[in-house]
Length: 473
Ligand SMILES: Cc1ncc(COP(=O)(O)O)c(C=O)c1O
Image 1 (cartoon, helix red, strand yellow):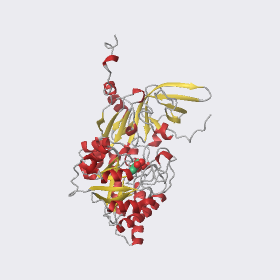
Image 2 (cartoon, rainbow, N blue to C red):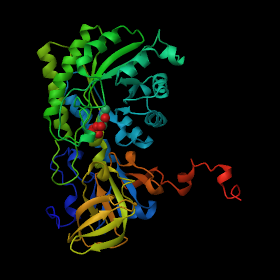
Image 3 (cartoon, helix red, strand yellow):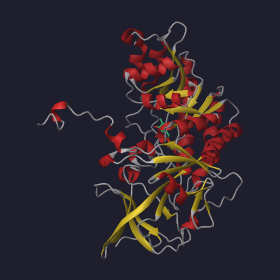
Image 4 (tube, rainbow, N blue to C red):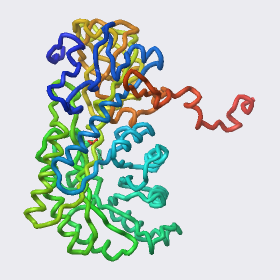
């Protein structure tokens, strides 16, 4: 038998009990508006989660607008508090890219980073100002580059191939960049060689990374750009990884970036922006202890201010691009429970009506989550079970050794902290339709993503005539 984590008495114990007026959303398992209602049900954003499932079906992503907005404001206010220069927070929309989420963060004054033409298109559909959009990616296609440049976005250049492509773009594609009047606005992504403790797949700052220029080549890169009148290099970027709980790596990163910043001036480049990436972690289980948004921003700002002061440099415009810590804790996923299986002496499986297709993080990164039974929040925790998804895959386990009350088919199971890298990594594996998402606020639930239908699943299928029933005769 496997060891079990410490027991909580009931799901109620996960309800947020903020100790301050300004609780940092990333430090709570549930959205900040989560409550228990008179029916002993979980309520988020003033909506009973059990009722939401009855109305919208399951699995269902339930996104709390207040928690998301609170996180956006905390980032912005902390930069205003700790950074004497200009600053900008941009949302790393890969965490959850859809029109409603883009519109909310933009309405809070954030820019957005996108990593594909699809994410860019979505942000534009949400009505965002292209000047606030930054295109990332280590292998952007020519189409994606042209699309972003045409719109007036900033391109975060990742490598030599891309740099050379951009510098020859007019000749290559006949693109009308209006080069004489409008050079292409770029930033450079560099790999800082800073280690942090997180999963290998989400660690991006070490030298052995597929992302970014090698800083050993920085002078060569600067020299090349200084000879390209069509490129305007406005900034430098680095991102060291995700789900990071230590502050020191980001402090060190600030100092490294200021050295790069200083060198850029020697090549006459108009670099005025430093983008320090994202990476602040969130609490998925009781044992996770991330710093608050305020502490993280303070660290980053002090690092840049100190380094600039010691080098006698003017303060750059400071940009951060958090994803997970903005949206991760603002959402829960509600499932309906189904079959159960006892493997005597080993474990008890309970199942839900989703799994790795709506949340691929456990199978991809061995990520851990906590769950509660939303229709019986005060029920005493009495058993250790493994919550399995419904996919044809033994590894499709949502939570191993979860602590739950006795459950039965039809119970509503809520997995917490599913706002980041869940919907955005969702798939149609086993041809499951992707779930719906609702935005909850002040007792109102608005559909922001419709549940896919069987029709959606075959929409792109094409059946050659000779394979169709009539063609087979
Ligand atoms: C370039 C870049 N910026 C920002 C982020 C956001 O990171 P996080 O969600 O950990 O804040 C990522 C995610 O890995 C990234 O690759």
